[in-house]
Amino acid sequence: MKKRLIVVAIVCLGGWRLQMLGAETRRDDALSTESVVLDVNKVKRSYLVHLPESDDKSKRWPVVIMFHGGGGNGKLAMSDTGWAAKADKEGFIAVFPEGTSPDPSRPGRFLGNPQTWNDGSKRPTVGAAERGEADIAFVSAIIDDLKKRYQVNHRQIYVTGFSNGASLSFRIARELSSAVAAFAPVAGHDWVRNRPDRPVPVIYVVGAADPLCPVAGGEVFIGRKPFGKKPGTREMLAKWVKLHKGLDKPRIVYDKNGAVGEAFSRPNEGETVVLYTIDGHGHHWPGGKTLLGERIAGKNTSQLQATDVIWDFFKTHSLPK
Image (tube, rainbow, N blue to C red; front, side):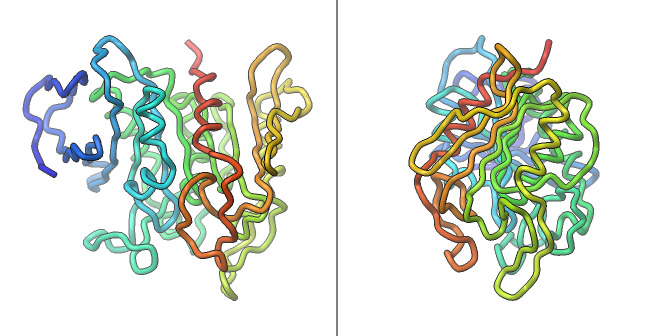
């Protein structure tokens, strides 16, 4: 991995045109990724970006921004969820931002120095939320940077995330609704009450046996330690159905191997609010690796590939012209 400073107006990298001055990047050719460092409110923040292989200089690419779970990191999210491989197959840019940790001078670690997101909950169990980190400003800066740096389709920018990262995606959909075309929380919660400027289409995925994100809601414990009360899944999504107005009653759009998809839509239009529940599945990215033990997170089943169903939903939605 080599570090370099971009000091020219336009640099050709394969089929990509970089259009930033003085932007610090690190490139990992083995993974076809770049690490970009931004200055957000005088704080250094970073994200990984995976570029699909292409020589099409005229194409404007969709973007999927994936937010890791609490205690995770961008590289782990990239390997766990399969979004980089999906980007190569389908042709879009995959982005993996880094959260903040209590001690930024040390590497992030799941237990000792966890990277988290300010999901707006102000929960004392989530460091970034308790500290009030400027994550919405960071996300806005990422989107602006991507538009300047790469050949981005401005109408096809999507956000997704897992757990604490999923909760951040809810907040983004409320506070940056004019910037994202659709969002996909996986096992997270909608903590903020801000009314979005526009209702954003949403697909939500959760395990029916997730002890950390219980479908019915209620008090959550890790061992004997309480981690607060969580809202129920249908309670959260009912708010988004109401925001969109005029949606029909839900219909089953997927029913296979214990995974069920329910969709709300308008007559003669595509799916707008979608819920996937996975029987027996715990607190893991569906189709991903097992990162937490079964005693804490429940079982990791393979009934559904979340990345596939999310992308199928994303690609049907664009920002209005």
